Structures are given as structure tokens and as C-alpha cells.
Image (cartoon, rainbow, N blue to C red; front, top):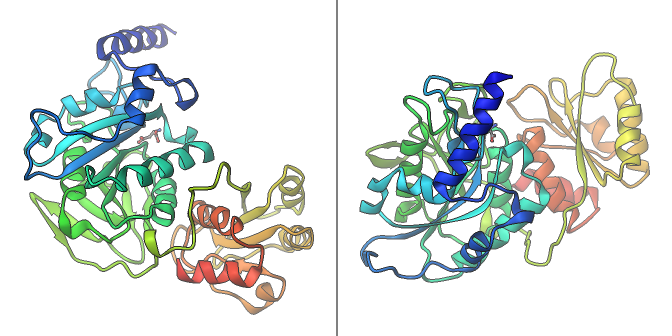
Length: 375
Ligand code: ASP
């Protein structure tokens, strides 16, 4: 209890100290609103030969704080504002003209469809301006890969979009946020980063949003790029070593410009003794799509298959993914005949992103399967 009170007091002081609002997007302060409206304009200190990089902050551990410098798990995510993040890394000014705006300030488990749409629209607006050369999004690591993949499918520009987070809060000894942010700005300003889709930068690695996933609860090397490998490395300079082959950004069928909401897509986890009632509950709650995190190669128990079958008959799209964390889910013929689609190598949480967007275009199972094969 005592520790909790201390944390509340510390957080309150931090709010005052940084002068930042930490409320979600629905309660933006007038200052944040003004920042959100403004497209980066040349400041007195702006250097013409440096790229203009806009940092859009959403919260997470990179904006987290605790009163203890040695604590790396008992902290509050999403409390430090974007201006403080920028001030903490003045070296960024040597490599880019950096400006920031606060989109929201939340732990990434609270990033929802509304925030995703707001972020994607804002990025498209900013990148349409000649004043912005690249975007960095600061984000909690827990759901970072979901936002990254959503942006990979909905940003309509070749300019670099880089998502960055950290595993240690800003107050920790050896916080990884400042170097990750510096590297993210460096990548966002690099001409070679253009046309690669949304990139994720942490721990000196550059990954494609399509393949990157969080694999460890606490360590700084948590992000891995299964199947494909990392796109590049940052060792002072940037080294790109892998091509992006999947369709992304300007080449996708998806656009957020006329979307105010996304169709409800739920994820159901497969396990021994699971039941068809899980599917019934999702359909009853309004799901238009269901991703099934099946065992192995997207397998369903008889009970789950019964539930999935009945959902499909009610017009709900069901996609099989895998709980294994790696590998391709193949379009098994028996499942395909029942219109139970295959996620290819998308994990359940990314399959959900693609299925939400696919359902804004079509309900045709073959067309949706084609999206999963392509993206
Ligand atoms: N819970 C935090 C979040 O996702 C974790 C992190 O940022 O690393 O916001």
C-alpha cells in the first residue's frame, strides 16, 4: 500500500514537472489538440540539410516511470510526455529536425481500434506534407506488433514509418528508451528506409512490421523476426540486409480515410477440452470475424470445428492461425472446404488486423484468403 501511495505521489509530481497531459485521446488537453492539428513548420533552429522527423507518442514503457531506478517491472507505463522524451535525447537534433505530438499516453494493452484509426489517419495526413520526411511512433511493446502491422497495411506513403518502444522505463538504470528512440529517428531519416513498409526498431535491430513479434516478457532482446530474420542492424550506421517481399503501404487494397470504425474481430485460443460455445459467444457478442489460435498447423478440436462451422454458416469469417508462435498455417483441404481460412504466417494478433481490414472490403472467403496469401 505504502509503495502504491508513493507511486501515485511520484506520478503526480512528474505530471506537474513535465507539464504534460497523460489522459487518453478522448480527453486531449488544448495544447495536445493544437499539437495534433499542426504540421511541422520550420523553427529557428531547423537545419535545412537534416530530415524533418515527427515523433507521435502513444505511451508505453518508453514513457514509463517509477521512483526506483533499479525497478524494471514495477513501474507505470505511459506517464512521460513527448516533449520530455525528446528533451531526454538532445543528440537527435544532430541527425534530424525533430518535433513531437502526443496522440495518446497509454499502456499499449489499451490501444484500441479508435486509436489505431486516429494514428493511421494522422500519419497519412503528415506524410502528405513536404514538411515531413519520416515518422517515429513511440509505443508500448506489448501490442506494438499489432499497431505496426496495421500501419504497414494502411499508410499510403513511401516515406519511412518507424515504431519504437523500450523494455525498461525512462527512470531505470540503463533505460533502453533513449538509444532506441535515437536509432528510430536515425532510421526514419534514412533515404534507404523508404519504401520498406512500417519498420520496428529496438535493441539495435530493424524489423519488418509483417514478421516482428514480442517473444519475451521482460528482456531487452524480446523482439524477434521469425521466418524472415531482421531487415537490418544499427551499429552507429544503418545496415539493411533483407528485402521486404510482402505487399505493404501504397500497394495494399486498404484505406482508412473513410473509416470511422473497424469490424469486430475476436481471437479464440485452442486448447484441450475447448468448446464450440467460445465461437457462439463471440458471434453473439457481434463478431464479424474470428481468428482461431489453433494448436500446431492451425488445428481445431471437433468441438471447436463445430463452433467454427456454425459461425461460418451465420456469415462470420473464420481464419485459422497458430498458437505455436512461428511457422506457416497451410490451407488444409478439409478446412478450406468449410471456408475455414488459413492465416499463412501471420500470428493470431496480426491475423486479426488483416481480417478487420479485409472485412471492410469483402466477405468473400476466397478474396479474403487471397489477402492472407499476399500480405
Ligand atoms: N505494458 C507496456 C506497454 O505495452 C510494456 C512496454 O511498453 O514494454 O505499454
